[in-house]
Length: 74
Image 1 (cartoon, helix red, strand yellow):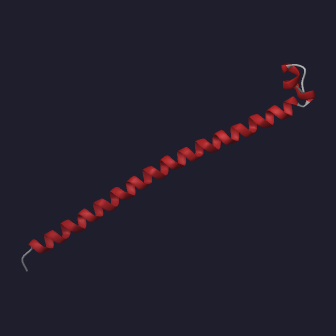
Image 2: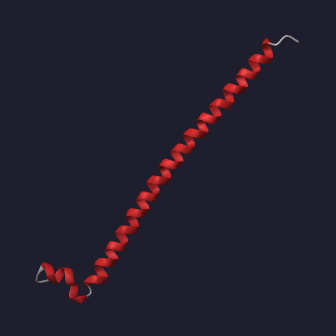
Image 3: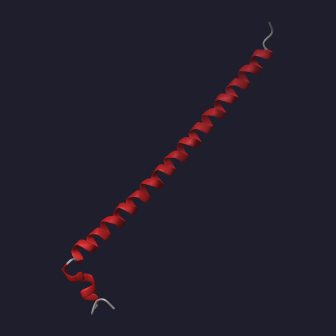
């Protein structure tokens, strides 16, 4: 084993603060990136649902307009 004890491992010859803070910063950034990706995915899914509902309403309105035009005597 490279280190004599867990304390020596954590201290890393005096460079432990730099090593462990870089690990913490990296994992913090990766965690935030994962949260942002999840948030963007949910926003995108919500927008896709809204767009599909809007397209359905437009199609129904066009069909109703065509039916009304056919039923109307000229």
